[in-house]
Image (cartoon, rainbow, N blue to C red; front, side):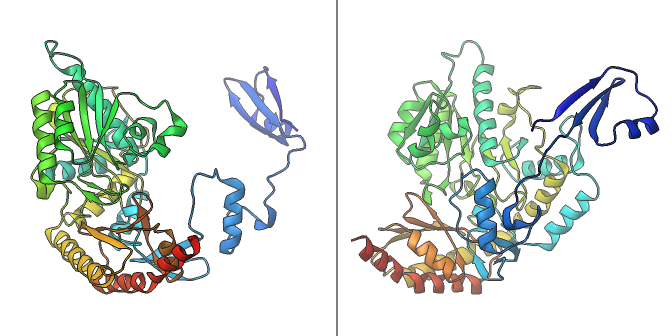
Length: 465
């Protein structure tokens, strides 16, 4: 039964009289007028067997409740995580899992890092949110650090990787309009590549190559051409047309299947963009911030972008994105050109400072590189001889195992054996992106479980035949 709204135009009486007059009403007061809502025959939501809101139940109860109240956008694994510590996760029944997914390459410092936790708790006790109408110290501290350790001169903060790429799209378009009027033509189009993933909002989605991501929401942003990842000739030719505002490329593709660009490819993109006045955008949302054993995935190439987008691990599990730009790009962006209510808030920036301070240390990066090399060697040694394993590839702790069959049976078998892993590519690549703090012993355990579970690929193949 709907609520009944009563508009009372008379001047408000004393507060004591109001309490008596509006007993049983939920109301608000505005300029001497009372807007009251009388609740008539209203019942609370049916909570089923869950009892009260915020219930704690078995995995089955939680999954059933999720099915009743959540929009069905996720094909979740049948695991209800209750807590984590280091590189281990635990479900509500107490089962332990070795986490080789890290929240999709987010939890770089694992779960419950004491320095991260202290930074978050201290900042939460000080100041959580003020919006970007005001200055805040943690935001400036984080921006200073990002500028100091990268090619960039300035930073724009967002709340996620897809938002960072949306900002990069806008910055590229604005930059092209900012060019001198004698420039031949207004460049408004973009280049992206096969197997790319740049996000799910409508602009970033237009840059994402998998058609099944885009087609339900078409028309998406027009003016995007997809080229083969690594095709130097095709990219150079299209950039030279003068129509391209920016080229978006992942130095190492994560979601697309752990594909690394060649130095020649990135060099060619850099030269062609310089010649044509196009911007080069590196999406390091997944591959950046220490994941490869370098702070930035583009470092070993010696090639630098005009814009770089970051997100996943930056705040250690809190939502953040960042767009790093040169002064040349930043000079085209003016007040009001872009913005965000939540982006760069004190809490998330303080968390990111704690993460960046740890990850950027040379000894930390060196350990990631060494562990990654050891891990890759173990995988090749133990899994490389299997008939279904086509290739083990990647850099640092961003590793892909390409199979000649779907990877989902192996993912399920590993999960049942206490190992959490992801897929990538066309569903035939195992993606291994553990917390960067993982130990060699834990990596060896992961290889052991993967090896033990490999026969499930033969079993699933025989069933399908």
